[in-house]
Length: 208
Ligand SMILES: [Zn+2]
Image 1 (cartoon, rainbow, N blue to C red):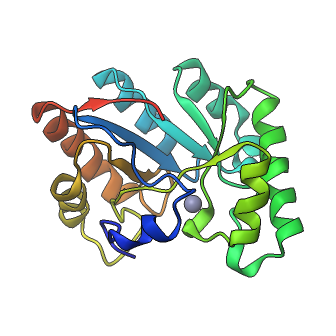
Image 2: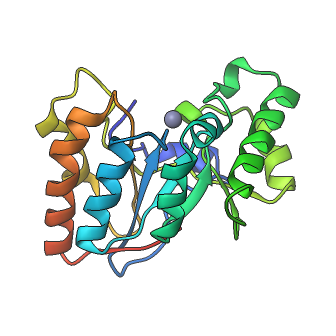
């Protein structure tokens, strides 16, 4: 997977959101795979310190296991997105089953909050055209990313993870980190430094 999405991919999948067109230094921070204890809370504390809002694409199963942490994300007025009930791979899943997984996750989300818009990010970025079609019809907004920190990747060093973000972020970029144990070492190094750098460069963190 590329740290920066090659320009051709958004042209191939124009109905999915790869960046938000603007030239005035607005950027969009997003976190996938939570909510979980400690790591999600660490992210929330950091965002609170810098007074930054972000979008959390949550796994339904994790919302069920850690409702109190999910409520902390909502209480801090961050944005919530859907990341399926069990983090499934769209390419390996029948369309009807995939839609069921998304709807189930929406149910878990709506137990705690009324989502103003149905943001959805496919796990692994893998979604079939047939699945995307159904979700778009149901008014889901499919959100991909522009800049991948690769925080989850064991072969990516903490410093490389930081560089992935610092080097590739531009106005309109959607930046992807993970509030997961797997990503935590890279995340804890890269996220505070990336935020410091981007603020100094004049970027503003916005919600999708
Ligand atoms: Zn994920």
